[in-house]
Length: 313
Image 1 (cartoon, rainbow, N blue to C red):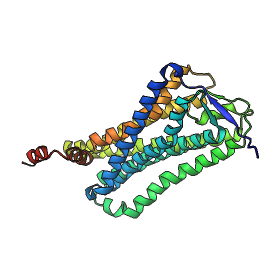
Image 2: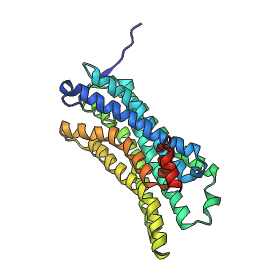
Image 3: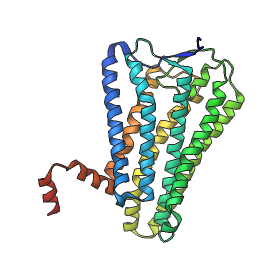
């Protein structure tokens, strides 16, 4: 029995014939680093009881997202680099589209949960242990993953019913611009996409801005020492939020603009989304979160008893 499988040509790679080996080395090295760096911090949070706090659970969830995102995309990209023709089945393309936005939406929602956690910890410290119980953290984590996943599933299900008239996709991984390959644009799908966009990005972004503004206003009234500690604990989250918003803005512009951006611009930004961002989070949290960096240093000092002995003295 023959199966009718639709294939799409990926036209996003630049000079792949000349730089095939270089691309593979860069992407394979990045994939290994992403897996090692993110999983190391997740394991540290899992193992050490002093990191069993809501804030670190949210960080672990954020890093776990990077592992899932990269593991869903990198094997296909590495295969494409070595292939003579860069093609993808439409079903795989829809899967990449799903992972891209389900994980992206979860990141925005997790950052929103982090802001809520920091607000309670800094502005309402007496109520914090009562409000942020383990059961509450589990519910927030579930909501941050399930709500985006379900909303994107509706989008992908609707998109899968649309007929394709163009089979050349101008990118290296499938995202929402796949809808430009459809023969007829769906108004309902467009409206639903706008709703999902507002729910994924603008709602968490407004909540984050409001929450961190409240934190800094309240801590300013409590003196410079409290303000310094608040800034120290909130800064990594703000840096990650700003970085993710900047990368997300490019994807929104790319999907909503009718004009075609230069191929080089698309290629560079696609590389940043899949290579730079999954490595950025573990670096920020590994260096800027004091407890995590302390455990990382201890881990790296294993096998160096002299160094540890000197530090203890």
